[in-house]
Image 1 (cartoon, rainbow, N blue to C red):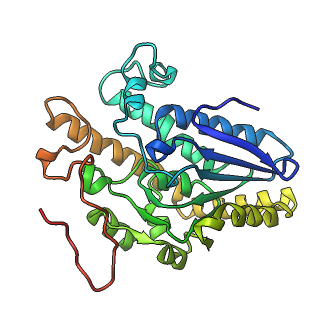
Image 2: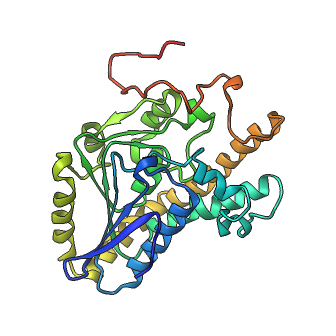
Amino acid sequence: MGEYKYVTYELLDEGTIARIMLNRPKQRNAQNRGLLVDLHNAFLEAEADDQVRVVILGGHGTMFSSGHDMGSSESIAERRGGENEHFTMGINGGTRKGSENLMLQEWHYFFENTRRWRNLRKITIAQVHGTVFAAGLMLMWACDLIVAADNAKFADVVGTRLGMCGVEYFAHPWEFGPRKTKELMLTGDSIDVDEAYQLGMVSKVFPEAELSEKTLEFARRIARVPTMAALLVKEAVNQSVDNMGFYNALNACFTIHELNHSHWAWVHDNRWPVAQPEDGIDSWRDAPPVLPAEKGTVKAAAP
């Protein structure tokens, strides 16, 4: 079994269930490069283990994931060279210049890795709690099933806080529906777990104190399905959605995402590839609280 710094990996029920937990609780499981690489390797370890039938993905601490790590000292050190630079910064486009660098790095570590997890040859269950922000949605949506705590909320704030048209793995219209996606992206508002359940995005809702055990019970039930049948159910559904356009839409939206980055890099003297407060957005560092998207009300934070 691999040694991981940023995730925990355990085998349960005589090895039939693997549980992977994001393990940066102080950073609310924000996704630095080390975490994403550890998560990828842990997923592949579970996939390679023929005893494993179901993989659970959760997070230690107060929330499942707050999205990409935008500025912790650890994340900055990974990108800046020196002894703490992550080795992936020098491969897969890391030594290229201009937009090519960002495009290739994000394709490998934010986009194609997520799509690879979506197609993992195991049944996967996301176990989420707290507010799931932005790139946290990507991890959750890559799983076959989503089980949530009763306090869970879901929001993508990159439009209002970074001037971006969503995250790299843009599954939003398929998960929220097209008009709800536009509303949530243009306002930065959130939906609660009950609405997520009504949308069919979430399969089960449990009290937070019972989430871990109830998710494990759910995984045990699914693990009883013959592996060939379970895999072909997954493949039939994924192929159906891909034939509806999901695969090609993901590719197209990733390209649009990179165009958005290039726009901001072009207009900023420092080449910073996301919007800044002078562009008319709230800084992600001190933005107001996320508001619920409620029917019949129009709320806005004070300027």
